[in-house]
Structures are given as C-alpha cells and as structure tokens.
Length: 382
Ligand SMILES: Cc1cc2nc3c(=O)[nH]c(=O)nc-3n(C[C@H](O)[C@H](O)[C@H](O)COP(=O)(O)OP(=O)(O)OC[C@H]3O[C@@H](n4cnc5c(N)ncnc54)[C@H](O)[C@@H]3O)c2cc1C
Image 1 (cartoon, helix red, strand yellow):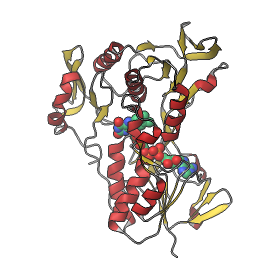
Image 2: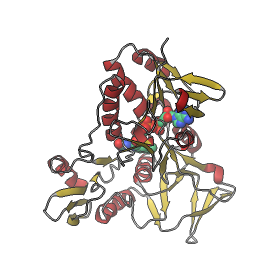
Image 3: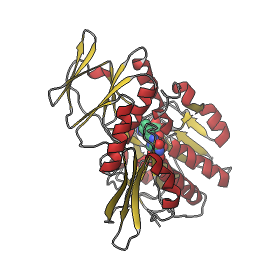
Image 4: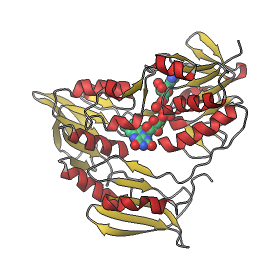
C-alpha cells in the first residue's frame, strides 16, 4: 500500500483538513494521529460549558471511531509523535517509524505555565482541550470560588462562564486592562464593567506570588500583598504554538512553524496549519483562519496547489455580560483611534490618514454595526 497522508492532531485544524481533503480525494490512505482521546469537539465551546451546564461528554460531538468511518481514515488516539525524519519521509512514535506521503502538522498550541509557589500549586488548571476541561470540572465540582489567572480573551470568557455557572470569580493579571493588545482601552473598560456587574472581581497589576492551602480552601497571595481566598484556580495566561518537534527536525520556526501561503514548511511534503502554524508571518490562534487554511491545503494535497487568502477576520469574544467584537488593525498599519459611545456601548474605530477603516472594537449595542463595518475592513492576507 502507498504511504498515507498523515495528519498530526485531531483538533479543528486536523479534522477540518481531513474533511476537506476527503471531499476531493476519496481513496488516498489517510492516517490521523493524536496525543489525546481523539473525540471531535469545538474548542471555543470550552468557555461556554458552565453556562450551558455541559460537561466534557456533553461538549463532545463524535467519538474517534465515528470520525474514522466518516473520514475513511485510520485514527490513532493517545499516541504521541516523538520525532520527524524529513529526509526519509517518516515520523517516530517512540521506536516505531511511520512513513508518510505528505505530513500535516496540526498539533496546536500549548498553554504557557507560570511556576506557582506554595503547597496549593496542584490546584491550578490550564484548560486547552476537552480532557483539561474534564479535569477542571471534576476539581471544581462542589466548590464555590474560582481564581482566574490572566485577563486575556480566554480568561475573560472563563470568568463570564463560571459566574453564569454559579461560581464566585476573581481574576488576577499583571496588565492594566483586560485583553491588552487586542482591545481598545475604552472597550476593555466596558467589558470589565460588564463582568463586574455579574460579580467578578479584578486584580489588575499584581501576579500570583504563592498559593497556600488553608483550613478552608486556598489562600492566593498576590504580589501587591492582597490575599484572595479561593477553592480552585484556572490558568489562562496565554498559549504558545508547539514548535519543539519541528525545530528538532530542522524545520524553520519563528513564532510558530513557518509556512508559506500554500501551508508548506521549509521541508518538502510537510505542511502545517492551525494554532501551530505561522502563515506568511501570521500566527492567528482562531478558528476562521484555520478553516481557510484547511480548504486551501486540501486542494494542495489533492494535487491542485492553492494559496490561502484571509479576508477580514473579526473576533467575537464570548462575554455575554458585555458583547464584544474586535478586529485589530493589521500588522504594519498605523492609524488613529476614535471612540464614540459610553458605558457598555463603545464604538472604537481605527482609520488611516486617508480615512480608511483599519480595525475596530465594538461593545454592547454597537456590536450590531459589525456587518456594515466588516465590508470596509482590509483583508489580512489578500
Ligand atoms: C477556551 C478557548 C476558547 C476559544 N474560543 C474561540 C472563539 O470563540 N473563536 C475562535 O475563533 N477561536 C477560539 N479559540 C481558539 C481556537 O479554539 C483554536 O484556534 C483552535 O481550536 C485550534 O485548533 P488546532 O486544531 O490548531 O489545535 P488543537 O485543538 O490544540 O489541536 C491540537 C491537536 O494536536 C495533538 N497533538 C499535540 N501534540 C502532539 C504530538 N506530539 N503527537 C500527537 N498529537 C499531538 C493534540 O492532542 C490535539 O489533537 C478558543 C480557544 C480556547 C482554549
């Protein structure tokens, strides 16, 4: 039998490129390999599960067996790739060698872990996949108070969701505003106020210095001297594309695995997409870009080399306490921000010197203007 197309990862990137490929090629052997349990799920739903009262099984959409049938593929679960040998077109799973015709890296990003001092460090949970989510839910069961580390998009989404799930939530992050780098300060203030309206409390500026077990749960000692009492901690301090194995195999790495517009790495027959990939300089950790990449890469794998294009890609933040849509100005552009509105309803627009819209941040009722504004936004990769 000829060597298969091998996809590493069964996240949205891996499964979607497999689906798109199968629309074009029903025959070529397809092998998916994943370190996790291979269930199909939508990762963005992880930060909506408490509000919707869904546990990990409730968020799972299909078992790997059903995915294997649907994709006419072999799926190896709980199987970790340990190396790539581009010269011989094979990869390593420990001592076992697996040959590929083409290799697709869809192995995602890993959570950044900050070391935590104290005897409560094992109560800190990152949530970056369905199994993480199951572990956190088990730890939070019957508890009341959650400390969230990080006030980025994911930290804010978890804060909103956990309050909807009945938890009392405090956030700690060493930044001046929520979602720094993503959101205009006026919009960030609206989101923070929305979350505070639900009862969430913010500690912006300090970091977690240590976590100690107490008679009644945990004492989180912050670097500003405050002590926050909690029962369990969610770590949402950021993600970093997985690059170690690619780097060890000699592939070009920058922030992520470097690929061109055809999703080709620096080595023949090896491609990358999703959170691990830096596409023409852009490493965007969102679903919309990976869907565009999946469609383009499927064409290339089926023998029709195709470059990916990105239109405007606004991000919808799942904080129902204060709806937000944001489209940051593309890299390399500069413009002036103008802010209209007040309170929860902020419309912040960034325009260049010719008056062209470069980006926006909309909150509250201003979110309704997104469709009209999207038409004016520049493409990210034309
Ligand atoms: C809580 C949360 C909420 C989010 N909300 C949104 C949202 O609202 N909108 C949006 O656009 N984006 C959102 N995102 C981001 C979005 O979910 C990701 O961009 C997307 O899911 C990434 O998919 P992926 O397939 O590249 O990576 P992943 O889903 O991380 O998949 C990686 C796969 O690779 C496997 N793997 C890793 N290493 C190995 C190895 N060595 N060997 C074998 N297998 C390996 C893993 O087991 C896994 O199957 C959110 C992310 C989080 C965490």
